[in-house]
Length: 88
Length: 423
Image (cartoon, one colour):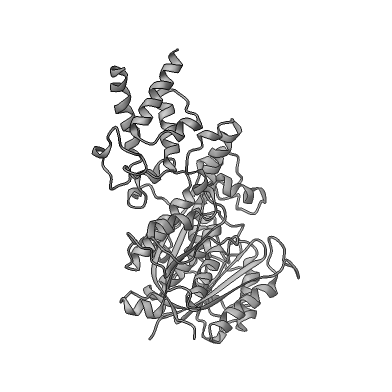
C-alpha cells in the first residue's frame, strides 16, 4: 500500500500542476488540498484532470467517482481502488 | 444628444502581418499574404492557395494561460484573442483584476468558430467517446466563444456578444459597437471579428467554383480586385479589432485617437430585385451607403476615399457602379477607391474588421494604400470611375472622410463612415 502510494502521488501531482492557475504554485499541492477551493482549479477542469488520470493509470472513472473527488487524497484513493479492481 | 465616438485602439492578425505596424507596412508596400497550402492540394481542392496569419513566431503565452492552451484547437479563436488583446493594449487599457469594467463591452463576430475542434469532437462522439471530449469543446466551438473568451480576459461588464452576418460581420460589429456608445449605453466597446483557417471553412467555396484555380503556382498574383482578369476571390482568415470609445472618455484619459466614427448603417436587399443568397440587390447596397452617409450628417461630396468590399470577382464592376450611384459621383468626381483583398484575400467573417483596421490606418499614415494585382482595370469600372481614382499604387494623401463597406451572403450590407479627428 505504501509503495503504491509512492508511485501514484508524484504522477498525480504532475497532472494536477497543469491545471493550476498562474498564481498557485506546485508547492501548494498537499494531500489534503481541495481542488477547487484551495488550489483554485476551475471546476470545469476537473473533467480534464479525470481524463488525464485515466490515461496515466490506464483506468476508467465513473461519474460517481468524480463526484467524490474533492481533494488530492480523494483522487489517490480512487486511483488505488481502480488499480486494485483492475488487477483483481 | 448622441455621444461622439472615436477609435482609440487597433489590433490585427492578418495573412500578411500580425500587429498593427507590420500590417500597416505590408499594406503600404504591397506585401501579399497569399500562399500555397499543401493540405489543400492533398485534399484535391481546385484552389490550393489561401491567406492564413503566420503566428508561429508569436509567443502565445502572452495571450493564453497554460491551462487555456491545453487542447486549444480553434484557430479563429486564437486570431481573435491576439487581435482583441492587442487592440485593448494599444488603447492603453488593462485587464480588470477584481470588479469588471461595467461601462466596457465586446461585440466580436464570427462566421463559425473552432471548426477543427468541432471536427475533433465529432470524431470522438461518433466513436462513442463523448465522455472524453474534455471541458472546452463547448467554449471553443460556440459562436460566442470569441467574445466570451475576450470578455473573461479583459474583465468587461457591459454587453458581451458575437454577431454573425457572413462577410459583413466585422463591419456590422463595428456599427453595433458605435450605436451602443452613441446612445449612451456603454463608454467603450471592443469591436471586431475573426474567421477560422482551413479546408473545412474554405471547402464550401471551392465547391461553388468561385475561387481562382489557375494560380496554385503563383499564389501572390491570384487575388486581383477591380481587375479585368479577376478570376475569383482567394479565401483568407484572421481577425481584426478596434477599440471604440466615447470622445469624452478618450479625452478624459488622454487616449490616442486614430479617427472618429461618424456613423454607419446595415441593411439587407431582401434577396429580391436581382438579389439572392449570393448576389446583392443593387438598390439595397445603394440605400445602405446613402443611409450611412445621412446618419453621419455629411453629404456624399465630402467622401474622399472608399475602401470597398471588392472581392476580386467579376462582381467588382457592379460594386463600383453602386458606389457611383449611391454617392452620385462618377468619372473624375469619383472618390479614390481601393481594396485590400489583393494582399490578404477574402478573410470572410474577418474581412470587415481587418479591412476597417487598414482603412483607419490610412488616417494615421497619411496615405491611401494601393490595391495589389490591379494591373489592368476592368473596363466596366471605367464607365463609372476615372482610372486615376482606382488606387493601383500607394499614394501620399491626407484623408478627411473614408467610407468602408462590406457585403455578405444573405444579401446583407454594412457601411461605416470614418472621419479624421478634429476637436
